[in-house]
Image 1 (cartoon, rainbow, N blue to C red):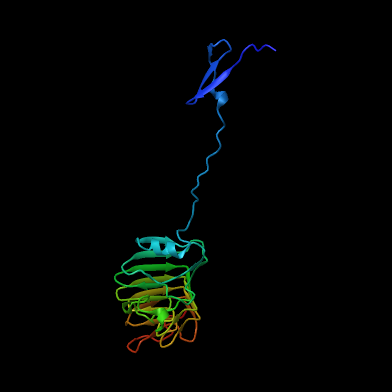
Image 2: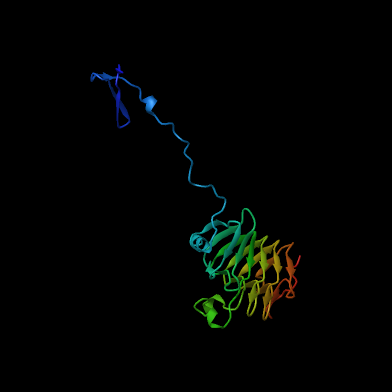
Amino acid sequence: MKLNLLYTYIIVAASCLCIDGQGRLLKASTNDLKTPKSPIKSSKVSLDCDVTTFGELQDITDVDGDIKICSGTIVFIEQIDLSGKQLTFTCPKGGCVLDAELKSRFFYIAGGSNISFDGITFKNGNSGDSTAAYSTALYPLSQKLLFGGAISIGTDGKVDIAACSFVGNTANVSGGAIDNDGVITVTGSKFEGNTAVTNGNNIFNSVGDGVICNDKNTFQSSGGGRDDDSDGNYPPDLCAA
């Protein structure tokens, strides 16, 4: 069978040269050779949170700003020192749990810091004890070893806590949930099952006016809402709803 035209397509740099059987150059449209484009999907997923792991949380606290914690549980390996930082921690979708598994406290906060926590659960924090597992290498004496099971607030630390829960935290001296030498405001938060050997199952305050307790806090432990040292001016139930 005789072929009237033999077309050879040579594609070079997205061009088409069409040659017939006699060697003559013909015009051809490259539109016929184009492959339909598939929709390009962005690989970047839009997230409404920043942090899902302890490592990510530890890294992101190096820079001041807002930190959005993702829903779920973050297991703490060691405490994070937030001294001198200006940070806000929130939980946009709810269900954010920090769990230290009784191996560490969560945060030490001092030195001109201004920290806010909103909607976060602090679970199973531990201030440390005198055994080798809680040496001064883990908790320097300047960071109040034995005080503050979940959070220890040092001099010049300012902390705002709203709609948070403190559950099952323990201190081997004072402040089962929080030990305070700075200024702390607590609003709409829950304290449950926190314990301290000496003072303040929930909040131990070492300064006269350091704790500001707003309405709608709830406390479910024998230590009352707040316990001051011997020089304090407030009854233990001042923070109760």
